[in-house]
Length: 182
Image (cartoon, rainbow, N blue to C red; front, side, top):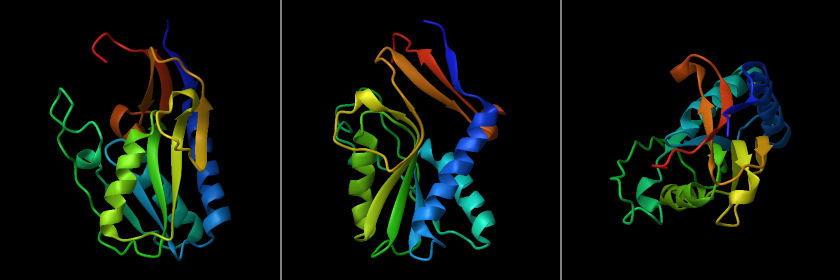
């Protein structure tokens, strides 16, 4: 299997713009809504969305990061040591509409863990999920995104790789064969 690009840099920026417009359509001016990026890979996307929403709405949008490492159901069974990132939520979640943001929705286990972790910060009025890529046929849990950048059908021997301008120097998404270690 050859690696293939599923989202070019041009389509990548259009996709983020579309997601922001959808959020404004549903959440209006974000007076009761907040954006929370799921560590580690959802942070870059969440920050981009927060910045663009702030530009479009001409106001600062509440933003935080959430690390669900210790809430994962595979935390103790992982062969590699899981090291927590950092949770930064310095605002009330109670009664707010929360948009959880992650890059790729695969099995649903990270999002389930993130929702458990989020409960430690209060009871949100509503929790929605925004993902850049939805791998539709690989879910282990009944979790579905509310906002999707790109839906794909891929097989389990493939991996989705998101490249970010902030890290790799360009924005694009690949489907690549998994290595034997993965």
